[in-house]
Image: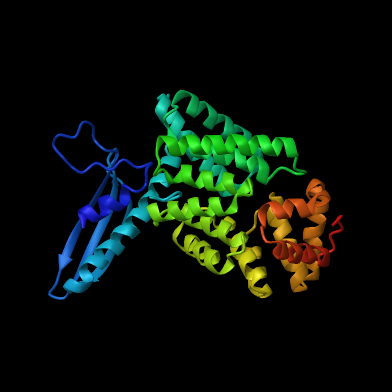
Length: 364
């Protein structure tokens, strides 16, 4: 079991796994400890994740299994995957511990690591006012530590976010941001071909370059490398769905939402869009109402389409007014903005038709 958990944890490249040894150069920050209780037919594994600095238990769980030889290996693998995901995924136990940690006079390497934490905090809220500071922090991090693959990957995603949430889009600025994003992503993958954040960034950059097949190929390969990375799972599933593979992509988004304690609103917006495109407007309305992202124009655009198509007139009117007041640049260039994100022409046409039902007036 120990070796299985070590193997699964090691797939998360931001975590250095050190097996206990008297010859360890430096003590680890955290300790994973456990005990097994056996009976004739079953076992119970109890696991604790301990902060070595103060002895506090940051996380604990228990897992049951049968002692049947035929099922034992599969049970061990399943438990190891669950443990690794809970601890090492984005927004998991280690992230939560580090995000709440205040370090006085931090060394340069901790300051660089904190830049990655600030990116995830920004992504959880999608507050565009925070993006310039996050991008600047990551740029300084890769300048100080040019071999930091994860920072390069997240910097690439920050460049992509300049495109995703800039209205109206500027063709020259968009091309420049995509070029920077692709270069940063490829630098991350050159440094560490198995780095999931780098591969995820490359998927994003290729997707927004309209190289859809290449983007999905990179995303699929990354998920095969680490199927426990729910951040990647959700993003790959969403790209797969938006490119027309709704039946394959949406279940991945749903699984990511179930397993990842992070930004639920992002996944819920995606699930709202999934329900909308399969014609289940009550379900779509339920998800979009749960997924409040008040300052994000993409969220309000999706909400307007859902409420317009579903006949929720008051809700549609509210979303239309918000977009007219807060995102006139998006409305001015709506078809192009939608087509950047939703790939199939028939899906774009249907979505725009729903926005017209919501009362939005735009050149088409």
